[in-house]
Amino acid sequence: MTTRPESTLAQRKRQLVATELTETALQLFALKGFAAVTVDEIATGAGVSKRTFFRYFASKEDVVVQFLAGMGADMRTALTGRPAAERPSEALRHAVSVPLAACGDHVERVLPVVRLILRTPSLLARFLEHQAEWREDLAEELGARLGLDPEADLRPRLAAGMALTAFDAVLRRWSAGEGAEVTEDPVALLGEAFAVLTPALDGPAPSGA
Image 1: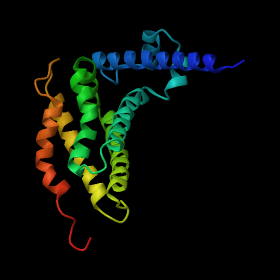
Image 2: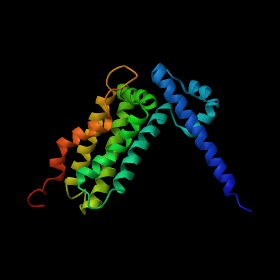
Image 3: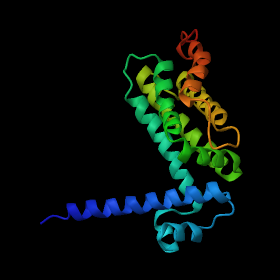
Image 4: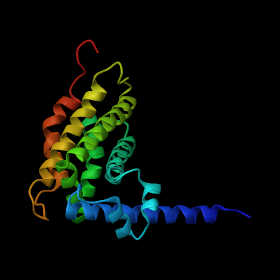
């Protein structure tokens, strides 16, 4: 006798509840503003108790933080999967494009969340914290690809920082304005940004390196 089917069913149920809580919270945040929404409202909208909410999230900020965490994980996974011989600029551009492509593919759902994050000081602070973590993750992965130690060589961390600066600039440009529609493709904007960054990312190593 095995408990694996039960475990799988329990995991699926937890994921469904977490997804429902997340979707409900993000919709309420976009509709009413982050500060105006309470945990009680999120729980009621998702059809669960407040106690259940706190089984999944420590606070309403954590709902958005989970959304951000997914972006960073997608970038690192994409960078890990790029061909070993690929130029740093190409590898980083493809990695950073993954969450931006998702933004472009799901504008109706993602645009209000991105605007909420960028325009709410407490959420923007968490976003910047995550970007700092992403920089370290990408620098570590890029260092491994190039055979460089990020603690001893400036290039991996500088390259990761430039890539994330492009990501941030594109996200802000893409989400600017007030309407429900956007007219620019975030992946195309990223291409423009990397056209500027490529010479620095792929240039020769500094003398003495």
